[in-house]
Image (cartoon, rainbow, N blue to C red):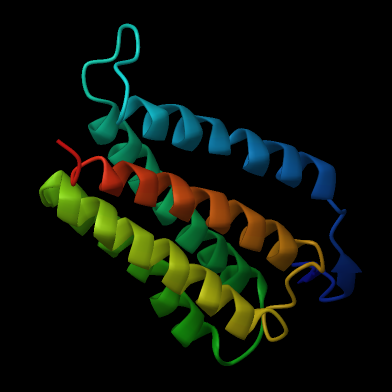
Length: 158
């Protein structure tokens, strides 16, 4: 990814943060895994694992959309407007999910995570995403969607 120095206008490479981003990304899966298990089995000191998972998923989906806001702000391309618009859609969907009954909220969040990774694939080159980002996003999204689907299945079991 490139960035333009504000006073000189020169292009400079931003330092890579791959290890930190991956560590935080994969650590961020822990609540998904723990609270999806909690949707099936009572966790100690937790009254509603499904609600906690839904709220966490909504926050993470909003965060993932905001990444594109930051990329659009650091870019000088003329198409920034569409990137800004696309960056707020995950947050709006996540907010809507928090207003819905849990079963529908989880379904909306699954759709949101899948739609966002598809969007990421489509803008990988124009937004100059780092080469490691899409493979990481694919793995993270797969685990997140599986956790949310496991939780959704808990609603269909007696």
